[in-house]
Image (cartoon, rainbow, N blue to C red; front, side, top):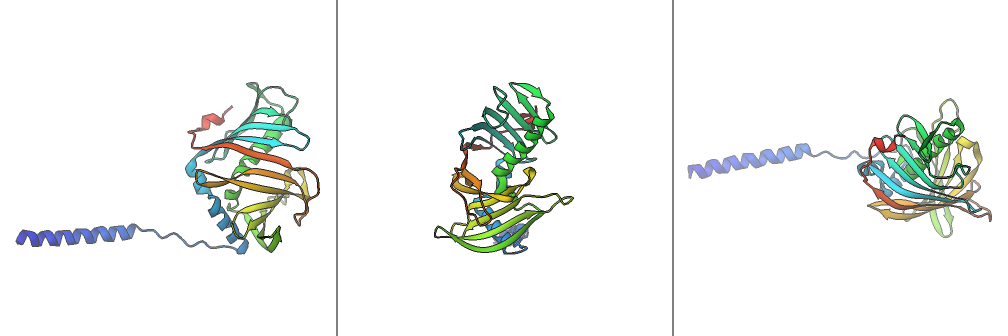
Length: 271
């Protein structure tokens, strides 16, 4: 009887201790705070498609990138990205737009320190070509991770209002970037589907090429890949700031054979 009583007391203390420990280890997620309604809408959209932490957990991605212009010129590259450090690599088997004067395989890379270019395995040091690489590598990476990166620091969000297009109601949010030395930065205007929370289309400028007054309209179609919603089909062309387009044909971009967690390392991005 004495043993039973002591055992009962011991077990009671043990379970109370475990309970207290478990409760002390419980960490409540902080409630998000937003600058304005525009940022809240973008946050909810990013949570729907998969945020940047989700990308980081997947570590890397390999996919096929196809870019087709209305005149039939095509680029096809195997893209590889390491999300930590935003490293980027592209092997172009077809490059009718990118360095069409070169025949054979073109490789571009960013290893975290420098941009590099190879043609048929030989390193090229042409500064003009390397400038193009310095645009392509971060641009291709950014397009893939764009929605996740729309929660980066240094962005400004402006809620424009609602707009109905083809019987669908959209919440329109304008996004700008903090400028360094008054240098022009890109502008994005998202059309977030009020029902699905997804961006069906968006307007964008290309500040690096001075294309600021006339935006492009990008339309998107999504595919679920390993728990994320990826806009794998894209088409874009010149537009107005009211998202009106003319009868000109679209430029088409597709991402296929998307695979995450391929075991890539920094060495895969070195020249």
